[in-house]
Every structure is written in structure tokens, then in C-alpha cells.
Image (cartoon, rainbow, N blue to C red; front, side, top):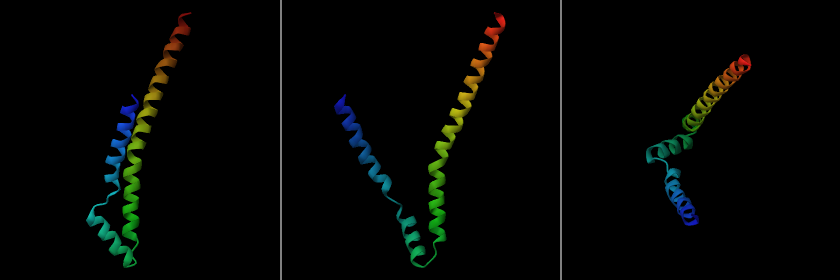
Length: 86
């Protein structure tokens, strides 16, 4: 079990090393714009990155919230019905 955990950690580190890379076109465009004094393109790319980062977590949170509300609602209704029968 311990070996599997270590192997999974090493695999995660190897795969995540590629995620630090940026496409050459984006990087060169950002470097040129920043060196020319235009920081608006870099700010737009950063905003896009944050948007892409937040959206999956927001979707999971909303689905979890709806699931919780739905399960809580059905449990409270069934409890209400059980109390009425007594």
C-alpha cells in the first residue's frame, strides 16, 4: 500500500510538471505586450485563467448544494409524515 502511495505521488509530480508550461504563442505575446507597456492583455489572460480555475469548483459547489437541499427536503418531509401517523 505504501509503495502505491509513493508511486502515485511521483506520478502526480511528473504529470504536474508539464502543467507549468505555457504555450509559446501566449508567452511571447504577453512578454511583447508587457515590454511595450501594455499590461491589459496580461491582465485579460490572468482573468481568463482565474475564470477557468473557479468554474469547475463553483459547479461542484452548486451541485452539492442542490443535492444537500434535495436530500434534506425529502428527509424532513418523511419525518413530518412519520410524525403525522403517530
